[in-house]
Image (cartoon, rainbow over all chains, first blue to last red; front, side):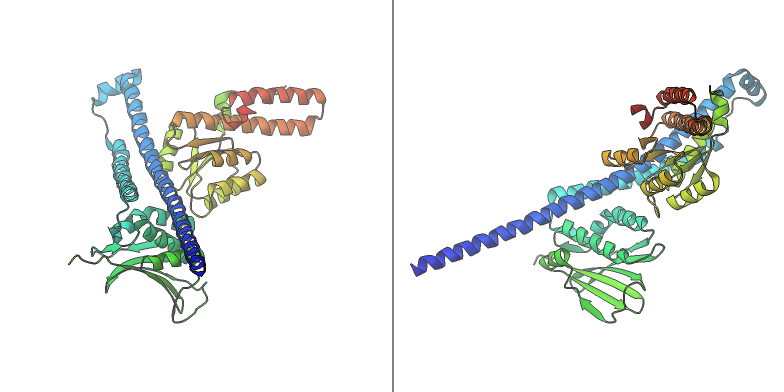
Length: 261
Length: 172
């Protein structure tokens, strides 16, 4: 009888643990989807802005061409044509043409990043290049900074560094912490995001000169960040917050992928 | 009876402000509207828009939503309190049903998505201006006349002009 009772307790404990794990998984999935939706919407927004500029520039060229045509074929235009010949002045077309080209290049780069991002979601490869993953959310980060009138500078290291964590979790953790650094800042300030590789870890350092935060001097590991803190720890990483004089920084450490023997 | 002046003459005095942080887009749009007889001034964020309105009292504003400093919806919210006769046409790449509803609630004249056909935008701007003139004149006439017959006539005229505009106001 006692043995049966112990087995039953063990069984129940196991099911509770499984349910808790499943619940954690569901929360994480929901957060993933939310993040994905947010990022895709932002990217689409940017794309539409570029398309609108292309549309206006192309429209301006058409307007100018129509004006030229009227000038050439109206009675005044015929007089103009006889006196000046058929040559068109191309100067007014050059600026809109250049704008079209520039916008198309930017739109193509955005679509490229959108494609990479969606691809990563579909495949969910656990090993990825850290700087590429940061570039994918660059537009989202800049947009968030722009909303607060904060100048975000991104300095990514040139060294290729493969990380072995959940890629979307990595991007979410960076986004969350960039927002956290910006939260206490007034408009017009600067936040620097730097990436680096040190002793088996990929580091993302976020820093700002920020007198709004109470100076804490020294450094401490955060223990109150709840969801993101847990998530980073589960990924084998950690968050370090530092505050010295008027400089505030958060460093995120992610484990590099182990090389195959 | 209200004597309505010719369309062209009415549009001549129209003051239009374009507000958008996409500098190349808004400058080109301004040029193209200019080619269609609509002269515009341009500012690049919500703060500048509020400053401009306080100093220059435009008739129509074409307003973007996603902008640094002050969000377009906040600009609209503020203008609906301080300048109720000013007509606002929202032009955004970030349109959604919820935002459209919010703009409608705040009495925006219309809500357009980018990219937009310039002829459509020009029509909506003219419609917004016509609506503004009618609204201002009706308010002035109501204040001065005070007679039932006059008020009835003005209401009839106002209804006629509402149907010529193609914005949200048509639906009412």
